[in-house]
Length: 269
Image 1 (cartoon, one colour):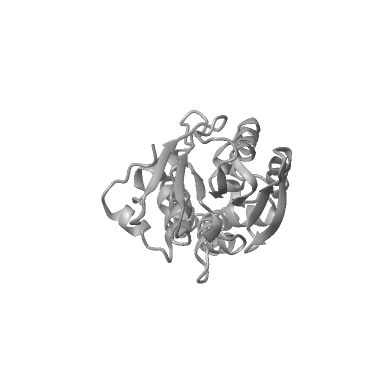
Image 2 (cartoon, rainbow, N blue to C red; image 1 turned 90 degrees about the vertical axis):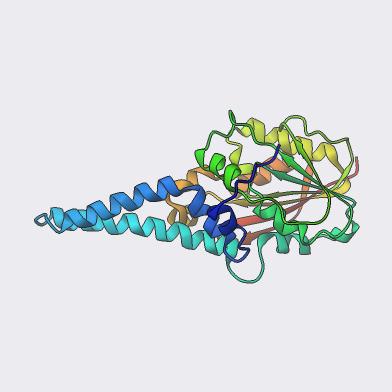
């Protein structure tokens, strides 16, 4: 079952296509941001009542905390919301979606990427597979995302199914396109990640395409996201999962310096 939308201010705010990625980062992680902001303000206020060198240390700590928030939000805007085109637009341009009869969208409850690709798919059957498992994905931010995510805004029929990473409920050699937008890093166990890539190889038709967007774990992302970078995985890790499943990388590019896009293909056997 996909995320259950809740009426209210935040879901309506998340409908804004121009800033949905940045707003979702802020809203889903608000306790973390509130804690950092509280620490930063406390440090700044304390610095006014302390003598040097403690005043300078507290001032630096306060400014540093606020800069962490600023960096994360700016980085989120760059990855998700900067400019007229999003990662799903770029991925859609790399394949011919008009020839796809079956598109499978892999999500863990966050539907921003789903909403985006839906606007580019005009025919065929669109499946949304929810791979959320609270035991394998214990992140509180993901639970908030599932509760707050607004429903899909579309008139077309969407087929929704729950799924397990080791057994996606789809036949062999069936999908023309599989799409994953910033969802797979929620799988922390490398064995689980490999299982789902093996499933991708099973259900893709010969010459079927995997479209994938994911974050990176490198020094630039560490500067941008701080400790949050440790919830991401390196581009080399993702490429290894793709190739070990028997898929062939046809295109790989860095997206706005902080993320990566892949198009992989299942070769005929």
